View (cartoon, rainbow, N blue to C red):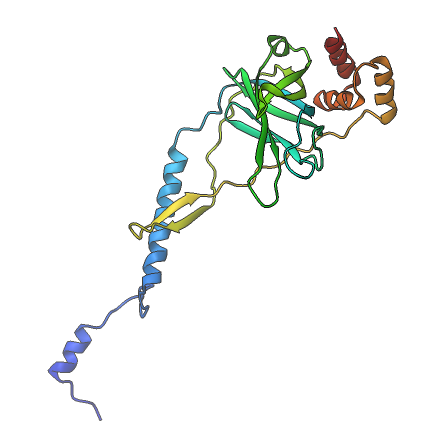
Length: 272
């Protein structure tokens, strides 16, 4: 038996949808869905802007400066127990630290070699010695500023004991033994190519709109070459330069990439 078609039924048929259904059919739009769409659009827009930006040029670097922080002789041990000193130095906008010499007291030894890029126009190295404390702020013990000698910039290796200032007065807190060398390698400006860096979206408390932030990828670490100077080699070199402390010779060897001839030449320059 055929069902009678009423005007109301005809109206329903006219409103029927013919063709493929849209993706959002029967989908409940929530606040999370809207947030995901907004995040995706912001990430795509930021990625497009990043790819169209002018590549970043590295700062003007004139070469590599090698700084050996050998040891220090301080006039006083501050505190009840022996101090645990470490050194913090600044070259331009770069800051470096040595390891802590546990129970170093007045005669800490670090023998730490720091290789840093030397920006153009930087002539001063700022040195600070701190006592590492467990239950309070690390205490500043001594400080000084070192002007990079012109002989170092010409390729010579330079060792000197520099006076330290502190609570005892200017230049009266002791001295620090440092070795400086410079490798005049022209560092070409490196252009950072635009890559598909991951994007992290974080909420903006003020407006509620997500703020896209690029997450820098991990940079590959360059493995250091293994040492080539044996203990016997260091002993022979020490016999050639008995006036130079053996620990200083080790530091000079590290600064010169364990090259025996370069170490001997550096020690000859230091002794002249």
